[in-house]
Length: 264
Image 1: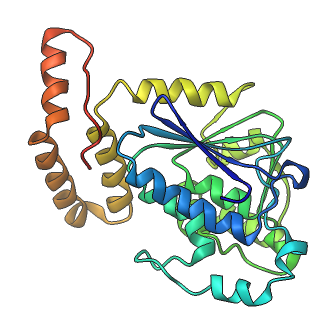
Image 2: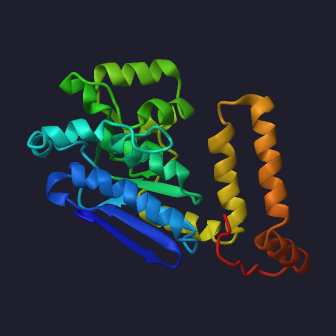
Image 3: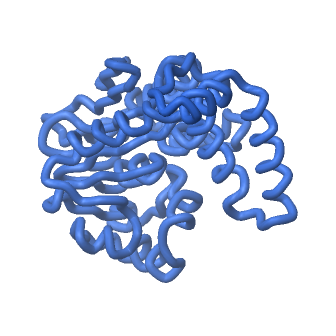
């Protein structure tokens, strides 16, 4: 991968944007590699959580237009949908993380602009420093956000906030982002908080954790008629699974469960 670091330690995948001299401005290679990293996590049944972050002073300053402008043909090709989710390459950089059956925590510091914000919103949780700043920067360039924000932001805030931020491109603070529901928590050391959360997750059945994510990703907009069958099917699968049996046995014995690899 070019400018993306991928490392698994103690069952946690650490995925880091690594163009610090450009505030992790996105190139087409980085966009493609983010989707590949999500696919890699999904195939690794030993991974229990993902921490997604940026090297250097910023999480991500958005698309590097100077670099992207040299590859206009590739830009157009990246807009063609290529995945079963109907996502193109740009959208998959953020939305592919929703298909990974483990929790994904984005750790944010410095600038989180444009495509960077859309990648962060594709995570399940966003832990921010108090001084990070945010913007749907596409408005500055006469564009709309097109890296999956229309789907992700709808789960987090109200439509008037989404319209305002997309229309104005204004910069806003971490406390304001928290108030609008766009980030999950604010910490002086968000990376340490993300690692502590990953440790908490590792105490639970990987199949139950993954199924919880699948449940809400597949039912959030659908209401009871469509949602209840998904809930029923996932629970039946868990009840038949080995990790559920391990959790029940350990709970009755008041012991720490020793789970096997994720089965979903």
